Image 1: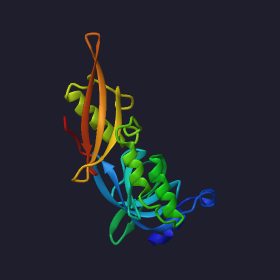
Image 2: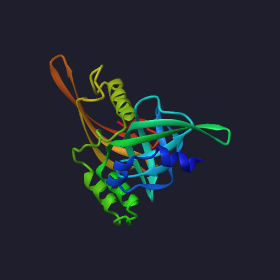
Image 3: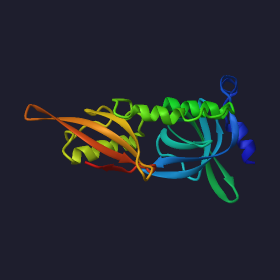
Length: 217
């Protein structure tokens, strides 16, 4: 029954022609109020995914973590379609979404997964190491809820002005690699105006896989 629903609910003819789709189970979780909710991946292509969840996301966009091969991919999806089904006495929601925001190396991993290509060694690790100490798009690539937490924690520490907008805060961020616990470490330079004077702050924050943000100093 599930397979039949996937066939009917999956990508249309135009999508099938434009992208290689992989129809198999894969681990996926989506972010709800800062917590990852486990779901079941059913289909993936370079354009988006189809997955089943016991509960639906509340908005039309959702941040997800997908395990493809040996890599965990982070992405923001725009939900295109939703539908419900019953299986083994439980209600499930089928969710089809297209990638709206995804890091270039993560998208490359999805394409390799869909085309059954091998991972090119440690290229991704080398690229991450090369990012260290450079101003980059690290902030833009964070899930929206994590961006909001970063801004909140910097405002609470007096390193950003109260009321700062998470979509366009006065900060720069670069990726510093992983900590011993596996959390992601980021260097942040933030600014705020105070009595006509521009104050600048240098900080380090960590973000774990659950989206928890910690200000180191």
